[in-house]
Image (cartoon, rainbow, N blue to C red; front, side, top):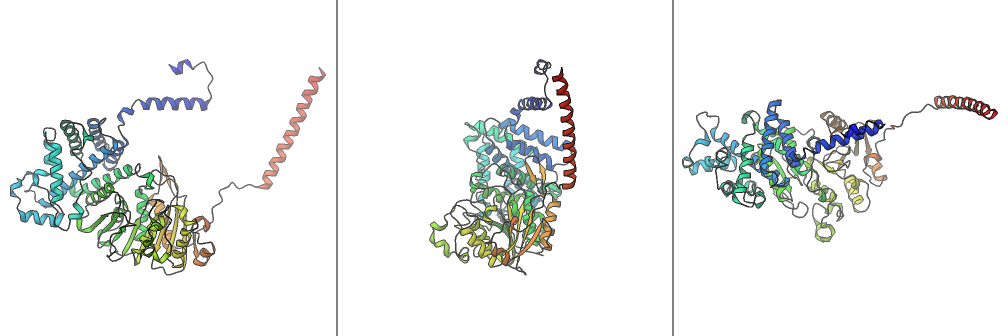
Length: 564
C-alpha cells in the first residue's frame, strides 16, 4: 500500500534503499515475540553449531524454542540462562557418573538399579574416584521421566543437589564440589509465585534438556557438553560485568594466549589464571595441549561467587577430574591463594581492565613479596599492574606468562612508568603484542598481550603489531588459526619483519622513557595512495586546457546572445 502511494514520486536510489531497509526492519520486528531473550538465541546457535547435519540442528533448535515458550514471560534472561546451565550440568554429571559405574559392561544399567544395592564401600570408592556420588534414583534421566507429574519437583531437586554436594564432605574433593549448585535455586520465586508454577517451568527446562541429542558419551559427549556450555557462558558474560572492566576472553584470543604461555615447553608442572572467570583460558590450554603435558593440573582464583561456581562446573564438563584442578574463591590482590605452592610454569590471564583496588590505602602492601621489588604500588584507580606483578611473582624460573592488558598502561607516567622500568631493567618483558580492535565482546578496545619470562637469553624486547590480523564476523572481529599461527611464528623466530615485528634493546626502551607501546617501535605501514607528481601535473594541464577551451566557447555564446 505504501509503495503504491509512492509510485508517482521520483525517489533517489539511496532513498529507496533506506525505505526498503526500514520496511525490512519493520517486518522483522513482527517476530520479536519469539526472541525471548539473547540467552535463548545463544543457546539455539551454539547447540546448532556443535551438532552435525541440518536435521540435528533443526531438532535441537526446536527443543530450545520449546523450553523458551514454557518459561518465557516469567523468568528473565539472566535466570533462564542459569537454569539451563544448571540443568545441562546436572545431566552431564549424571551421565558421566553412570558411564563410570557401568564401565562399558552392557549388562549393567546404573539408572535401573535400586538405591538399596549401593553399599558404603561402593559409595566411598566412587567419591574417591569421581569426587561425588549420585544414587540411581537421583540421576537426571530418572528425575526427567516424571518431571511434569512430580508435585514436589522443586524441593526434590534441591534435596538431590544438596546430597550430591554433601557426598564429598570429608573427602579430597570437598572444596571442588561444595556450593556447585548454589546458583541453581529451584525454590526461587523467580520461577513463579506458587509451587505449581515453579514445578511447571522446571519440568519444561528438564524435559527440554533431556531431549537434546548429545550422541554417544564416549564418542563426542564431552566436547558437545563442554564446548556448548563454554560458548553459552561466553555470550552470557559478554553482557555482564562491564562496569567492572570485565570482558570475557573470546576463544580465539584464549587460544593465542595459551599457545604463547606454553610455547616450546615440553611439559609444565601446572597452569594458573589469577582472575579465571569461567575458566576459559585454562580450558584452552587443555584443548591445545595433551593433558599429560600439564602434569599437576589447572589452578585459578575468582572473586565473583557465581562465576567461581561456573568455572568449577566448566572443569567437570570438560572431563577434568577434581584431583586435576583447584579453583579458589576470593580477591586475588588482597587474599591470594596458592602462595605456598611451588611456582607455575605457565600463567594465562585476562584481568579486569583498570579496576579500583585498595593500593596505597593499605601501607602494608608495599612490603608484600609480590609488589615490593617494584618499589611502588599500582595506582588505586588502575589495578592492571597489580595483577601483572602478582602473576610475575607466581611464575617459575622456566615459566612464561601471557596477560591481556589495557593499552594505556604501556605509556602512562607515574607509578605505572616506574613499574615498567622495574620489568624492563630486570629483563622480564619478552614480547608485547598489539591486537586488532573489537575482538572482545562488549568493547572495541584494541588490547595488548604482555608476555613475561624469567628465562630470557637476550636483552631485547620484541614488539608485534598484529592490528591488521582479523576477520570480520557480525558484531566482532575474530582471530583465525592463520592469524594465530602468524603471530606465533614471529614470536618464535624473534626476527624483525617490516611493519609487523621489531626487537628493541633494553637501552633503546630505557631512552624512550620505558614506553612499551608497540607503535613506538614498529614502523607503521604507509597505506596512503601513491601519487605520481609528473602524471598529476600532466592531468592538471589537460584539465586547465579543457577549462580554457570551455570558457572560450561560453564567451562566444554570451557574445552571440548579447548581440541579439
